[in-house]
Length: 113
Length: 110
Image 1 (tube, chains in turn yellow, cyan):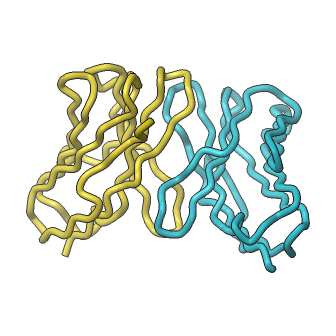
Image 2 (cartoon, helix red, strand yellow):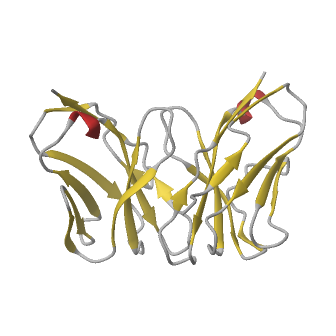
Image 3 (cartoon, chains in turn red, yellow):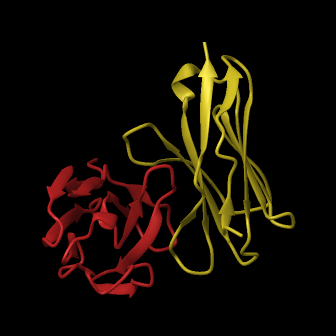
């Protein structure tokens, strides 16, 4: 079956702009996670959803970052007033339930100039 | 101290050898442990998970867990050049998020 999909695969933006990154989880998976990975590092947790609600957003670095999952399926990560330090690969993962293994999408590479 | 520690490598082994990758973690309450493989420019791919002390085997891969020592390892038997990648150890503590190490780069020499 189809895996986790993410769009766009690459996003280049200018400092100060607003960006939206989209994640479409594996069909039937109730839990969805966002991570961020910088070069040479492991993925770093940002936020996860169980259904429509953000169950844990403790990893969001500041209030410029926000994520939604309005219908319990597709999620959008929104970054306001982007900064050069936001440049990274943003990874989305999903799992059948919170207790199950997480499967990652291909990621969105964000570059802030 | 990092929550999940891995030697960055590179770990270089000849084709056909056993590659041993190690990981230590700091949260004693951690319940689940995962190994992901990540090829350059690609996203992490789940290859093994383990929940109980001892060994778990899947094909050429064996995951080993020792909760008392807070130690997880991954053995790759009959290593192939296609196994060359970065291997990420991930730990799930009491919450549901994964805490990752920085990864160990494995090079399998033909």
